[in-house]
Image (cartoon, protein in one colour):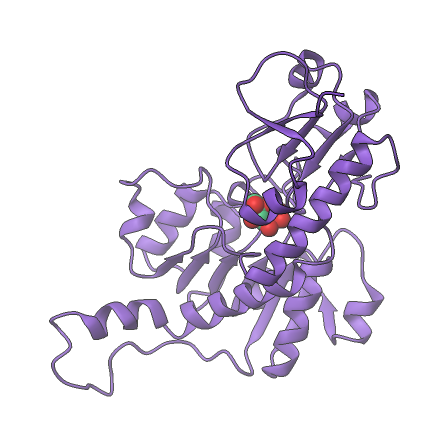
Length: 308
Ligand code: 8YV
């Protein structure tokens, strides 16, 4: 029997390769001919036309939780299950969100650059003053699994937690002492605004010029969601004019930004290369879940982690 042919945006990680154990034939994204499954990790796009081109596809398995690059509706209409890796990367992503809150608030990256550079010749008590994190107000857009983990960490820092979400969450309000706020209330009251929403038609451009104008001049925007949730031109203007204190972006649109993009030249922004889930442990679990989903789909079984 020939091995199942799996279209993948190669290379896949060594953990994935090891778990696949030579039981499938990985073929590159531009391959033609029979394809039994599609394996992705956040990109490129998997649209209806692609599903029709590879009519034999039994499953689309994504290494990651966000599936904004996959037309899930089109897949469902074609009875192709889509798998993802929920519930295992929330802690790692919330840790990174907190690293970015602290990094931007306390100017850690800027300080590191300064401490290594020629200008650091003498300590000065008035340089590089940041913003207090403990006791400040955190606003979380998207109180899903990742948002709740961010709120949990904020509790330990004695922060007040506000959240905005499509639905109110009893767990967030009771266990995490988070208070529901409208979008405008959250923007106006928060010292740190953290984005953990999925990218959908409602959240594309969710933070634009009008929203940035509502934030405090002392506030920091942290994005660990998807780049397209924020209008990067509006953000560049706002940061250049120091209308907000700082931004910390783990995701951008496009990713990476063009090397000459003005955001890359600003001191009051931290940019990390999509590291939310990037720990050995979490990426290993993501590999396991995505491979389990892949084989379940190839065998015609229910996916253990299926996107609905
Ligand atoms: C991954 C992510 O890095 O899960 C997601 O949605 O954005 C990240 O965990 C991404 O899937 C690419 O590997």
